[in-house]
Image (tube, rainbow, N blue to C red):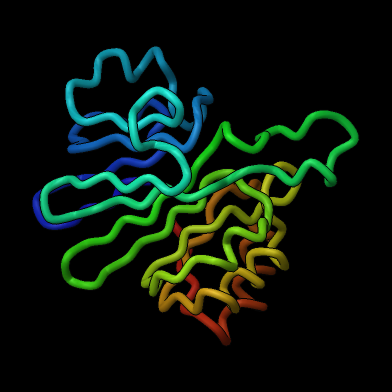
Length: 181
């Protein structure tokens, strides 16, 4: 995900797409999200959980006139027979707070966890994972939308277009759903 704000590009879980990034924010280390191989050549600001001070739930990172709130993201252990794919403490989400009251919440790979319901930020744009399996289902993501009431929602992390359409159809009364191309 690349977010352009002013003259800066914020890249969240960019995989190998790190050129022209002002900052790279990683929710967790995984080849499809953030790869050590590609990040080793990155010369800008890099935020990675458990390797950078402040990149842990509750952390706030100040970058110029923007601050970034680090929030929990994890798989609920009770949903899996074995160890969860994203155990508590390995992953994070980010709320990017821009000075013009634009707050973007990139949830990362997460289940619908109780910490989401405690977020007191006014979210302008929500970016939830909706693919099920290792992340929320469209129905769980709808509960997040109902709770946070974002103006715009851009679902990610789904493999089947039917998952997008299902989410769009159930969430549209509560938010404007946009599909990335």
